[in-house]
Image 1 (cartoon, one colour):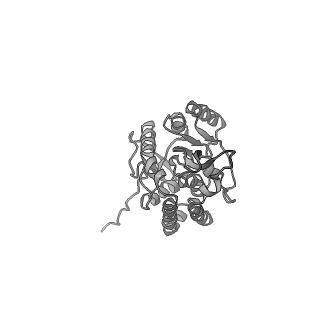
Image 2: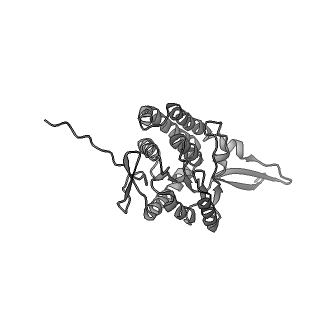
Image 3: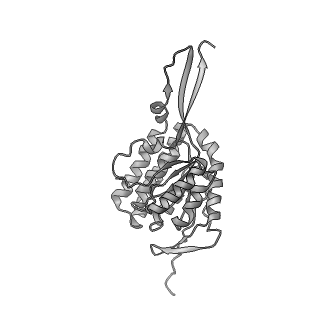
Length: 272
């Protein structure tokens, strides 16, 4: 008998909780694998899925969102060796797991820290509360491909936003494998949508999409492309985090969570 032929894995997109191939049927070779090459149509589908998930996800209690993120960390822990086998350094995989837990813990504490009662001159209560901005487009950093991805996605979704993520073009295997973790955790479909392929091809359409509310350009390394994306984002006044190269091992702070929040202030007369 001949030796068994191994089943080769096909790395697909992650849209609406499912794993479709690109509608164009295209793929590209990277990391000794064939990975789906997303098109403009795939991007539009991802935004539609993200928008459809906003109401339910933002309406989920902060405590429950924290539980869901913690479940993701549990699933990551169980697949730790798989990420190491993909070439991710073991210490970075551990840091990514810990970071999910860290953001999960902030879910029901951030409103207490960044909201509250405001002192006003008059017989009124004045209360401010942070609310999610909606759909966030994210260009994930190329390195570190897992820890960097976790560090931009987790703060966006823990506060109730949904995300359309453009994964690292050079190292997409860990991001797609993370999508498999999300799909098998309790995260509702559409909360995170992940596309692989050419950043220069899909990012301009993401930045210009009128149903995307905010943009995280952390992973954009091309200065000219970054300027083009910022100009496109201005069309509907998207909130924009500009490209940067942070120390991903440092304390992340709360900046990435608060960057995609709106503040709602409510006035109410006293004694009524």
